[in-house]
Length: 528
Image (spheres, rainbow, N blue to C red):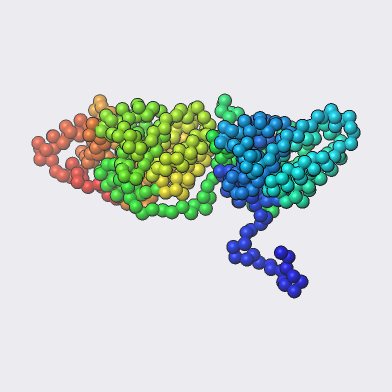
């Protein structure tokens, strides 16, 4: 209600009053966050893009979500597909359009326009369309409207002045009706739409794009303009999945997630001691090392600790579930029992089968369905085949931030010296891609001594903990992961058979504890 003449107009926002223009929630995952609350309520929004990029799906989902989740009936006007075709095409997303029509939550009107009739008639206006629109809106009290697609409506018009005038009339009519409208439009060669006019009369313009690179297709979404509201201006990947559209913006940009002080075991007491008490719950962990260094074994040690209500979700990009279970059984990790108890779920896929966004969406979806307390990705360096370093970093940033927001512990394994991703080398840029996002970084190494190859483990960093600075030998056997106390002789760090031989020699000759090194200590603790 407008203030009375005696009542001063407020100059400051009341506590709790909404900022900016009123908005209509879309119900589309990620899009409401990207637009800070949805599409402009009571105003038209233009969705433009090339064929097959998802314009109709986005528009239909906006109306279906409005009718089913927000109590806002919708009117769908299609100029290409009839009602039955439209209902059949979106049924795969779980949208039962015919049921909603029967419940009077949606109305579908197929408007067939013959461009040749328009050319012969000469004059052209939208009065007939306005009558049909008004009738449909009033029949169910529609709050949302979809017009799909605008090019068909104006396909026979070559007169730019008439086209501009009728576009203005259409958008003004929709505003006067107070409906939140989505209009879809085909993209032009050098313009957002074929006519190059619709974007100027729309209050909000969203551009959808489908591009193919290295035989992998990726869909992108960008909010080109949004009058009266702040919004994300970058390109954001989106997917069309089993439940419609999901946009993947960077979440929690302010880094406001909680930081737990609770510790969880790594699955090995000696490693817990090196970490100053284990991992922090909800932290991010990176296990890096060369091929055969034991990355998967260290990862499954943590996964095998899930008991009670704890659950682990394991994404394996190199081994099938059966192969992983068999291989880990050789070191005493009984993963099959955890799988049977539904405390562990193993999902195996080839990274080259999909784009990065599809993998990220699959991970998000699995997390929502399984509700784990631990997520393992083994190994993330396999994504180098389908993305460059910056793209992989963006994916990992989204994932790590998402997991931290939910308080889920994340463990990532990485093969060292993978091209363009992570390398345990002297080059600082090699580590800046992923390791800077990580709370705890454990490095595994293999090296040859006296004709045999041995393994070593060290904690490169662990935020918030007084962790060991030692490099310790470890072995893998049917008893699991065993860390061996550091042993040094005059030549330095000794491992394997050489260590055993030197220990026997020192013992026979009354070797001192100084030669044997600190057998009963985790080593000097380094500052966090």
